[in-house]
Structure formats: structure tokens, C-alpha cells
Image (tube, rainbow over the protein chains, first blue to last red):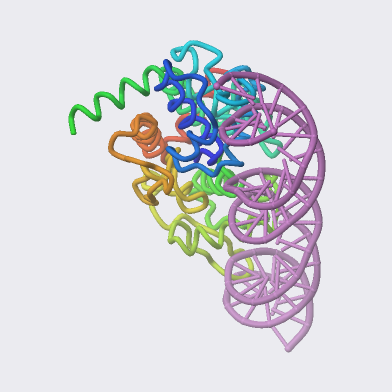
Length: 145
Length: 145
DNA sequence: TTAAATCCTATTAATTTGGTAGGAAATATA
DNA sequence: TATATTTCCTACCAAATTAATAGGATTTAA
């Protein structure tokens, strides 16, 4: 499961991406429209800024804007930022690799092989899930309603 | 990430499945050979028994045996038992569905659609990952070493 | 000057995780 | 019957993580 931080972060990014002409977008307006606790969201957007995914404008009429093209921001990056590894086991993680301390032989572990295949597919999917892609999906979902 | 409980449970089950002719297998021997803390493993096997995945024999020379065929026990079942939902979001879980309270419209949520596709693939993979399948994988991995 | 925004630091309550402790009860064998 | 070896049962616990909240300082546009 994703943490609420990850979920809120992705929702906020999609929200900002949907308002490309009205940027910057204030935390308050995102919090209200997406039903996310204001102060919590504030700290999340600060982290996204720190990771150079967002950029901020201070003062009145300030807020947050995307710091990259919406097709360069994807769910994998955001999830890794807030939740760390995407893999089911640390020993198959690309970005947060760690041995399973109890493991007798990593190279012949069948559980590991399963986890590896799942990680590869999941990461590939999360990579295609850019903000642009998510917005396209939402458009189609609204059409077929 | 799977919890250690899930990971230890699956490792213990694979271990027992690999000794079909020497059942029942004692907790102590599994703990020693798989490097899992004894008392912790004890409580894990108790849960597996409770879920009718294992059965136990008390007293000297007692231990745990599989309560089903090793091709009927798969990673999905064990993970759900210890970690709950497999899905990235509660709103796409088959067995532990919950609304995302903050969500404005589940039916047009693009993030949800991504999570749904990933869950479907992951669950399918975890279903094919039976104890028999995992042991076959390990055999092949040992051959190609 | 004021309203509205981000920025910054600190705190916290609840839950989950990953165990440990200690012994009771059951059973096979000598 | 005594003993060794097992599961079974209850209770406890420390550390980490999660999901926030509190309160105000600073910045900027109008």
C-alpha cells in the first residue's frame, strides 16, 4: 500500500498539472478541492519542492508550479520519494537494494525471483503513469461515463 | 514491501514443502536453517495453522506439516493473511476494499486505474507462485549456477 | 498597510512492526 | 514413570513509522 503521503502527493501533482494555465496553485486551494489536510499537504509540497519536482512562488498570489514537464513526472518517482522501495523485497529493489539478512542464498531464492518479476512490471507501469498519462486516463474515464 | 512476517512465513512454507517426506518439521529446525528468530517464527506458524494452511503434531518428534497440497498454497494467500491488501490503494483491493475518504470521484480517478492494472498483474503473478512453483524455480536457479 | 501566501521548527498521538519472556500441556521413548 | 522435546498460550514491550497538528516568521502583491 502507498502511504497517504504518496497518495496525496500524486493527487496534488495531478491537480497542479490540470491547471497549467493557472499556475502557481496555492496549497489551500489544492487542500480544499482534493480534501487533503492543509498543514499535512504543506509539508508534502515542501518535500516535492526539495526534490525539484515543484517550484514555489512566495507571497500573495503565490503557490506551487510544476518544475518539469508533466510527462516527465511519474508515479514511480513520487512513490520512491515518500515511501522508498517499490519492490516487495529489499533484495530486488533497484534504488534501495539491501540484502535480506536472514537469507541463505540470494541467487537461488525462488521467492526473490517472483518478487523480481513483479517489481519489473510494476516499475514499468509506474513509469508510464506520468501526470500527462493520468490526465488522459481521467479524460477517457469521464467520456465513458 | 512485504512485512518480515510475510517473508518468514513464505520461507518457512517453502522449507516445509521441500521436506515432504520428513514431515512434520519442527519450528526449531526451520528457525535454525532459515535464520529466523525462534519465538517469532513460532507465532507465525501458529497463525498459519489457524488459517488451515499448516497442521501441527504436538509432543516429541512433533512439528508442522502442510495442510494442503503445495500447489494449492501460494504467495497471495500468505501475504493477505499477514499484510492485508496487496493493492497499492485500498479502493482497488479485491479482499480489503475501502474507499479513499478524500477521493472526490473514484470512477474517474486516473491514479486508481493505474493501481488497478498493477494489482491485477501482481495478484496473477502471486497466484502462480505456489510452493511447488517456487521450488521448481529454485531447482532451475541451482542448475544454472 | 494588509491580505494571502510560503517557510520553518517543533511536537504528538496512535498504530504497526518485530520481536521477547516464561511457562503449561502434550507426546515419544527409554 | 521419568525425561526430553515439542507445540501452545498469554503477556509484554521497545522502536519505528504514520499521519498528522501548532504556531508563528517571512515574503510579496495590491
